[in-house]
Image 1 (cartoon, rainbow, N blue to C red):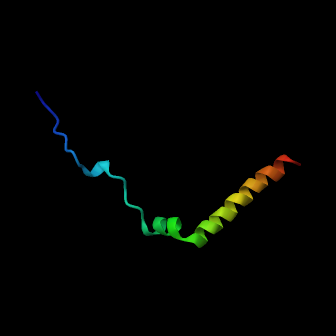
Image 2 (spheres, rainbow, N blue to C red):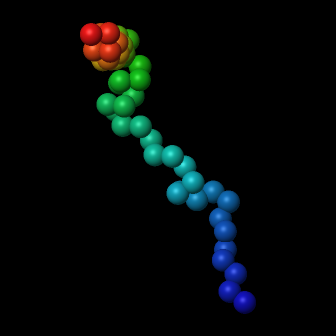
Image 3 (cartoon, rainbow, N blue to C red):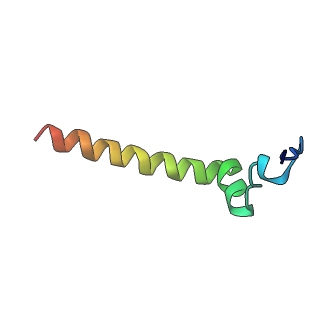
Length: 52
């Protein structure tokens, strides 16, 4: 019979490591503030558009 050998720890089981840009966007408070403002503007555009 052909049994498949299963390795306990194989490379495909681990998630990819974040890039430098990803780490920057996650940790930098100024970038997070900019994204916060952009998100709020998008939400306000939807709300204002629904009330007119």
